[in-house]
Length: 247
Image 1 (spheres, helix red, strand yellow):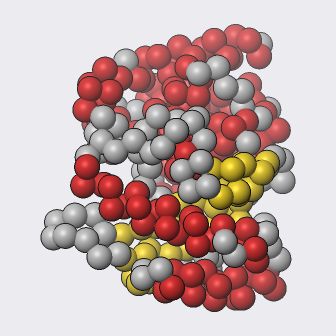
Image 2: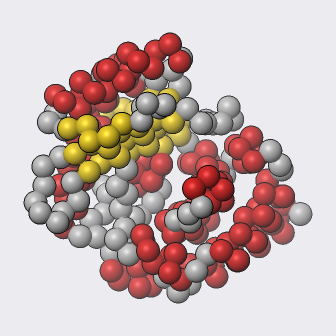
Image 3: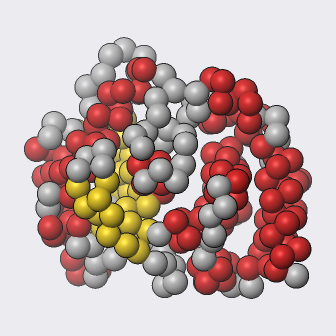
């Protein structure tokens, strides 16, 4: 499955994401230490049916390698014509600018985080869209991290992303299983206890405005209209079922 385009103007952003992924995949030194994850990875693997605009990785190399890896990444970006607009000094995180028309998206976020779980599981996958092999998080690991992301994003930044709710709903709807070990490692409590916390959080914090604010540009218009009013209710129902199962 390829990434859907809710707006044809996003075709250039998608093209640049694929160019970056090919450049990274063609450098053995980079693929050795980067594990593909997140919404773009899930969509390219046919686990998710929405557009995604960022490239997210786990960095599994040593701290001593970080400077060399950053140099290789920056060379790869430069070689394909991207400009580093901003970069973190802490982790390999970049905001990359590409040429685009006026009033169009022109920035791509690339992040390789070191805040991962020791319980993560990875697998080698050929991504058909770019005809390259990457180490990727398994669907169970991705699902677990998505369950955590909703609360974690709020605790760290005070924000809530509608896409997190959508992804949780979609993974449950498609019968995917989450890795309870990742949940426990990330939150420090058993899965049952955390899912009860997550249910309470969604019930009290997620509003129609939150669901609308980023999903309306990540889903096709008809798709968005069908899901927007049932998303919270059905996600809570899925969590209730899972809580009962674990109990």
